[in-house]
Image (cartoon, rainbow, N blue to C red; front, top):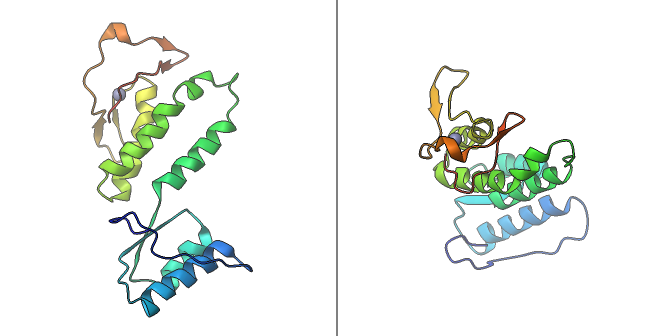
Length: 166
Ligand SMILES: [Zn+2]
């Protein structure tokens, strides 16, 4: 799919072998060789074979992981959490997923910033809105100060707030 137009520009049906990798390889080669399309960015899930193929066979195309697939993977991980054992984690599920989307949008393509922004939710959940990184940098949440009466702490976690920005 072309990100600018939102249109499907090509697809293929592969019947044998590593389907995802083979289909990507076929479509990319077809777009580049036959349709003379200049591809600058290719998004996929975190498929190891595709990652390796992009590095070896298409080194001039920037390969990034799709946030939708990351989100789907995170949602799957939440399904494995024992709700009775970790009720606070489930309470934060929606905010954590929203925060991942926000972090991906706000990082300007910088993976280090993405990871830092995303990990900040771990501090926020613990009601820790200012912390020091391993490198010694002092980090703070980007939200406004939370009034004392709003926070209800339980088992070391603050309860979910609907409006969170980091
Ligand atoms: Zn915070």
